[in-house]
Image 1 (cartoon, rainbow, N blue to C red):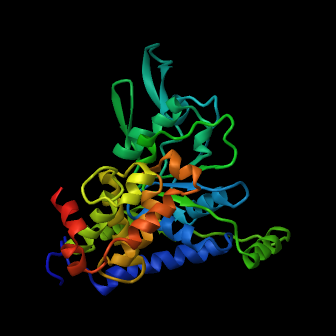
Image 2: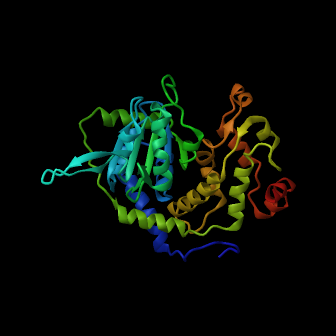
Image 3: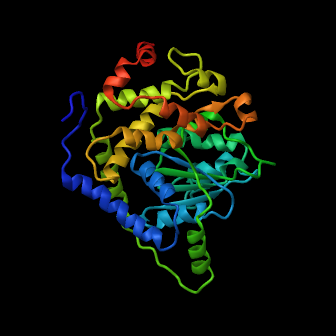
Length: 353
């Protein structure tokens, strides 16, 4: 084992094979309904097995909602879809206390009626269509896996996974997610237009009479075991330093930050970004059939982890520079080998800060 690796228990080939087999089974079932979008599906599965939440952004008609609902059907879990609208109230999401009368005694008492949030997989559809007050009702649930009504906390089921969608082109009458809530999402995933061949297959499938039945392949107990398995994947100190280097280079004004970051970025990512890079790297490694996290895993997940945690400034926006462009430049400017990273004068300042 590489020097400096942290491990909570040795992993076997059978352990790695379990997650890889689960990925294939889920992929096969999703393939009956969803055409293409493999990168999106992979990132959703990484989020699921890392106990993270995922925000999907894309124009209408790209099967975001269908993808999530189909994923829920591949698992023997409780699924709930919440359609966010401007008139939706927090109690419509979390639930509320009602007065219930015992007909035999006439005694009245409060009883908590659970809202749609009490399920394993939550589809928060068009989350930016509802006001901040209702958006904030998800904060405690996503972080603490519970909701508090009155003074009483109510535990949510395990596993608990929020998949939210939003439309980037229709901004009239919408409420952009506050930074605090965006930070609760492990990934922000862009859903792109399909290729010509993929769109051809979509047109062929959806205009015929074929009906594909999706079968559940995992239950709650199996998913929890796979999530625990991900936590046991070892990660070297060098990979942790590399992930820290990427995140700390997004913070404007800090020691060792590249000049282009100071010029283009309004503010950078917080500590959750490092946690999610490493956890996501662990899940990706197992899904790829490996027993340890590699630099490649961190690089592949840099954009979905950082793009909603790093905000570019007005100068960057006016020049058409996006957060993804800045992330590409940060990755390109960061040495991948341990010797280069430790000897670089700029990164020595970052490690000493």
